[in-house]
Image 1 (cartoon, rainbow, N blue to C red):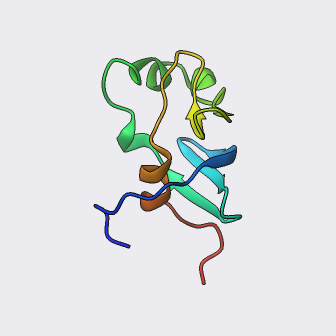
Image 2 (cartoon, rainbow, N blue to C red; image 1 turned 90 degrees about the vertical axis):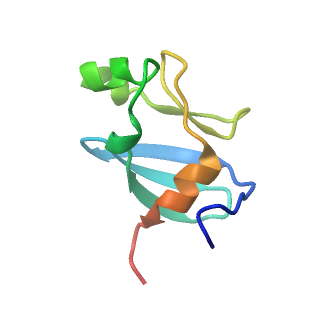
Length: 90
């Protein structure tokens, strides 16, 4: 899949593995891992960088189909899928 392809996919579970590294489960049944540190730029994400406890409060919003933080910040589920790697390499 090329990075410019848009896919409809939802995140169904999230777990913080390490500093800014998330394990995501998608509605395809796949579990993938992504380091989102480089994605946390701009006014909505500054509080997550400044307060790691807020970052770890990430959860799945089932209506939006993606991950969200208490301050309303979220990330595109298709972008997360495209940039993530399988949790267990093939």
